[in-house]
Image (cartoon, rainbow over all chains, first blue to last red; front, side):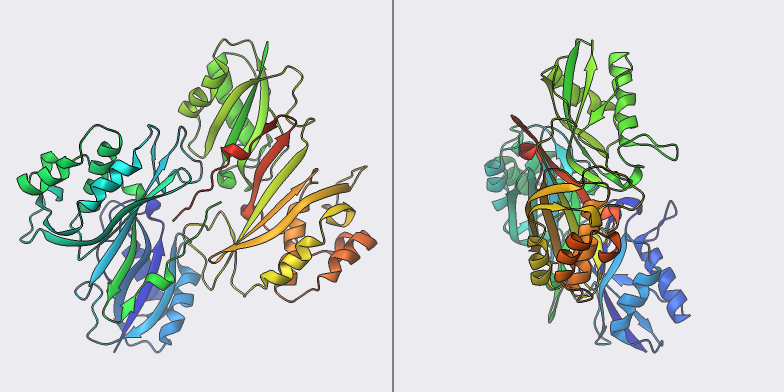
Length: 259
Length: 259
């Protein structure tokens, strides 16, 4: 038995998310289907974490076990031959038998794209949130800096989700501007369900002048979801980078212009 | 009667091209349909030129005449409210009654994107040609420079098309590299049907080592389509910039990262 590790890029637009759901096709399902065709086995695919419906991944990590004799590095090419074009395996290798995509994660990074312009773009309509009111990026960056360090993110937890530990450490949290496109890049020890989207939704309200940066400190103190902003839509969010001891997806992330 | 001018961005993936065709929806048709709803008139929309099925536009220019009293600058917002999200009007104004989108063009620029990497991208699958063999960009740039100046482009004309004048002047012709993404940017006095795609197809064969840069000089001398390379696919091509005396789409072109 060998443990094979994949780095997967996907456009989440057409999927119900990473994990198998009754109401549509999941990315996990599409890849497992191709694995079954290739190996003749029923391989269970374990990812670094789930992504929601419409959320994208620049470099998701997943592993599976197989008795197949296909060389580890050939899985990327063999899977891509059969997968839908909106899912691409960028890399495959053989991992240590003890490696686990989810349990061994040290740091994760997400990106959230916002197109701030009078009109939306025909090209990024499913890949960046369009905001037509002018955003104050300096204010958003002041707010982003308040997330740095160790905090109890209970207020940034989706309601209805029960978790024992809501403390997370944020190592990087910054907005950058490329023409009309704003990119929020955040790295942390881990993220709860919807946490990045609630952080972004709160900062967008700050950037629009509807809320003060201080409200982030208040959210940490009061620990109530109602002190935060709305949950930003899924289609601007990308799982960007996953880091393990001795394995990092950064070299596989494309920094590609659409135009 | 007023002449209204539009700058239109579109993702050509789902369209049969700019011009109305029997086998699917054209961009022209989609916009004319919305104009009819807004104005109650049957407005004929004239563009700077056609684009083929699958070809994109960063800033196409088109005009129409109307008796409607909608303020000229409001057409962009009003049209976008009804248009499919893969067509966006970036700007609208009132032009001189003598302005003509096609006849008055002074220079046009196209962009062609090539993703040169072992695996295609989930995100640019319909927006850049994927080439997995390593391309020699220096060789492609040596070839690109040979297009500069005035030449008879008869060899770069799609067969079956009859044209009296096949002489065109190229003002800029260059490949640039952004990570794995190669961008060919070309500006000329005008371009014939498929001309940019045949130029790109020929340069790609040069970049793969299957053809010599000299073959471009030979194509100019022999004036035969068979001396050139294949026609590169439509989905990597963008109508980028259209220039008139006193009107230029450059400020409206977004330089947007997809990630």
